[in-house]
Structure formats: C-alpha cells, structure tokens
Length: 127
Image (cartoon, rainbow, N blue to C red):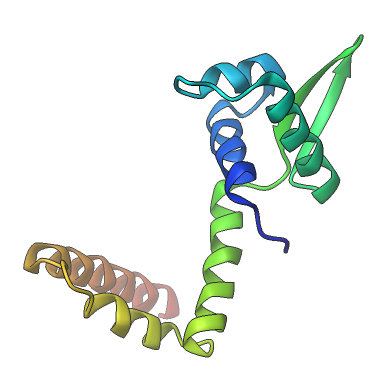
C-alpha cells in the first residue's frame, strides 16, 4: 500500500469524516485559513490516481468518496512502521511505547486494562 503525504492525509481525514463529498465540501471542512480550491483539487486528483479515492460524476461535478477506510489505512501504516523500526516485532514496539517519557501511570493502567480485555476475548474465542 502506498503512503499518503501530509497534504493527502489531511484531505483524507476530512473525506473519511464526510464519507462522500464534493470538492467545495472538502475545502470548507478545513479550518481557516483554508487551502486554495485548486490545491485541494490537485491533491484529490493524486489520491484518485493512487487509488485512495473514487468518484461519481454528476453532470460536470464529481462526488468523491474514500476507497479505503481510515482503519485499514492506519493498520497498513502501523504494520509498515513496526516492520521498519522494530523488525516486525509488535512486542518490540509495545516495549518502546510503554517506556516513552511522559507515559503516566494512569495511561499504563488503561493500556493494561485494554490488553487484559483483548486477552480475555481471545481466550473465549479459542474455547
């Protein structure tokens, strides 16, 4: 899967939220100062070429929609990051993540609770 540039990701964030949108709607979703209409149009065109965005034409106007969900994109992005920086080891990533400065006890306890819930669910599904 190809990666998104920063500008492409910003447009995709709005499109994921809107689900379907015309170019003017995407531009209006940005906070002030909004990017130029032509800039967003160029980014959308690149996203269509990369396969991230599809469109339906009504007369001379296109309605755009994401071809990939935010979750699927992030999952692929995360897997590439784990492969690139942690030799494919999710455990290595988790170790790095939990040892980061600024991680509070409350954050660690919440993560521990989420992991415990996932372990319990997997145990139930295996039975």
